[in-house]
Structures are given as C-alpha cells and as structure tokens.
View 1 (cartoon, rainbow, N blue to C red):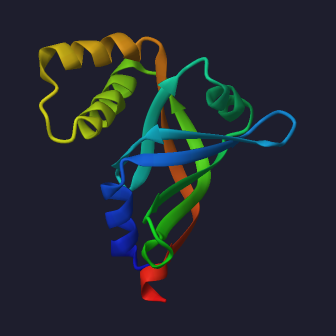
View 2: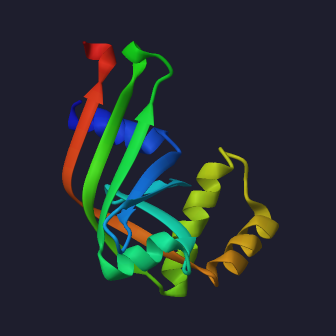
Length: 142
C-alpha cells in the first residue's frame, strides 16, 4: 500500500489490535479503539492493565489495523515500534477525548460525555506508538 493508503486505513479504521510482551515472552493481545495523532497510533487504557505493566517493563509494541470481510477485500497495516506511556492528566484527557469522539462516530460528546472522559482519565494512561517498522497489504490489488 502507498503511504497515503496506509494513512487512510489507519485514520478510517476505529479499532486496533495491540500486542505487548508478557514477562514469559508470550504475546498479550488486545483490541482497542484508537486515533492517529501526528502520524502515530494513540490510545488510552487502564493504568493497571496487563498491557501497561508489560510496556513499563518492555516498551516494544506491535499494532494491527485491518479491514475486509472476504479474501480479496482484506487489507491491513502492521506497525511495530516503541510505546510511550503518557501519564500527565492533560495528555490522558486529550487522547481520551479523541478516542471517545471517534467511538461516537460524529455525535457530539456533550458536557456529560466530556465529564465522563475526565472521570475515566484519572484511572487511565495514554499510549503513543513511535513506529520503527510498518508493513501493509491489500488483497484487492492481487
């Protein structure tokens, strides 16, 4: 896929599969809602989650964004890199608001939605992925 196609898929798909490394070396895989900020995948998650404990010990991460229901429509982007854990309340709220807005699919969050994000932010961290390697595929081009 071209750089433009990669950016389009990362920006249009709402969910990302995130892989971190457990202490025994096995992968820990989860699915989250994400946004793209300054060309980087960003998401928020509970500070006490296994993925955060894994990233505190080893910041390597791989993220997969994929799309398509049948073989010739499959396309995806895999981003491997280093995760930065953001703990400052403003950073966490900012990423949380962006993710919540994306989840709302254009519906205004309103005061209640923004208040809920602020409440949730006290228990969460934001993660921003600096890519080291990106791979993509589009079976529609086969």
